[in-house]
Amino acid sequence: MTADKTSNGNEPATHELDAPPWRRVETTLMATARQITKAYNDRFASLGLNLTTASILAYVNDFGPVTQTQIADHLGHGRAATGSSIDRLAAEGLVERTADNSDRRVWLISMTPNATSTMAQIEEIDRAIRNGLRDGISRAQRQELAALLGRIQQNLVGLDDPA
Image 1 (cartoon, helix red, strand yellow):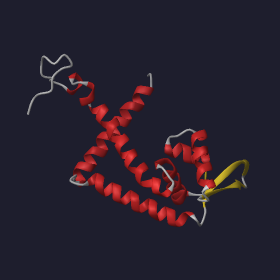
Image 2: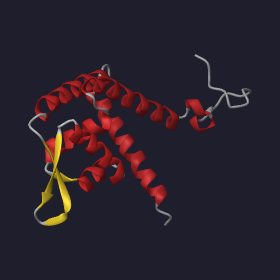
Image 3: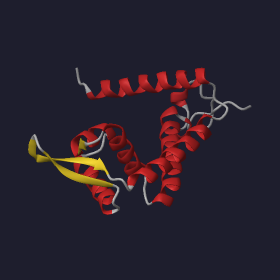
Image 4: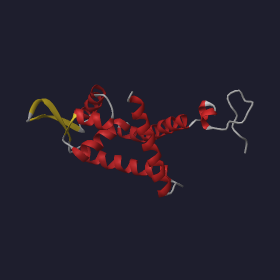
């Protein structure tokens, strides 16, 4: 096994921060996230969905009826982008908007009866992908990874706080 070299190729890298950009943990995390998204999008395409629209359906299935703002906040997406995804789902007959009796400015998003079989397929695809992701990784390793990723998320939130 050879040691990593610094960007000039002369000395072995002694720390991951000295490694070339394609060997840094941040790059690996981003590439992994892209691969996971692609895996979901490729499999959801057979349902006419992508990861975002499938996630919206799953959220509405678990917590609906809910507002578009609640969905956007949960997914970490903008309200306009979320609204476009909801429009697509409504056009496919999978969700519907109904007026919120307590606030006429707000629409509630709920699943239609047509979405039941789609939701079952989403859950089946999700289960298969999660099983594939976990192959060869112990529960303890997954817990450690989740803790590390949680810490990275906290660190990133801290970067946004100029205090």
